[in-house]
Length: 108
Image (cartoon, rainbow, N blue to C red; front, side):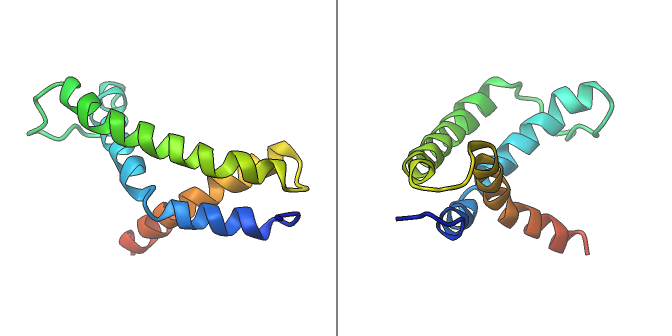
């Protein structure tokens, strides 16, 4: 089926569109707790509920997306001639491409 890199690229680009939500949730969680504690970001002043609500909201969203991403990529990996390291790097970068595009456009 997918002996070339184009099929995994297209599948991961399509998965990258809904991936914007879990990536944003992970960034928001990291920016308000560990990165803010290290002084790398400024904490949202109204975010005072603690971490538990974020784990209850973001945890299932990230877990479901991660499972969907893995289930889509595992069979493609077996059918591709790419080496494993290159395949997974292509998959991650292609999945993050829509999020990175949104970040680049919003920074303009």
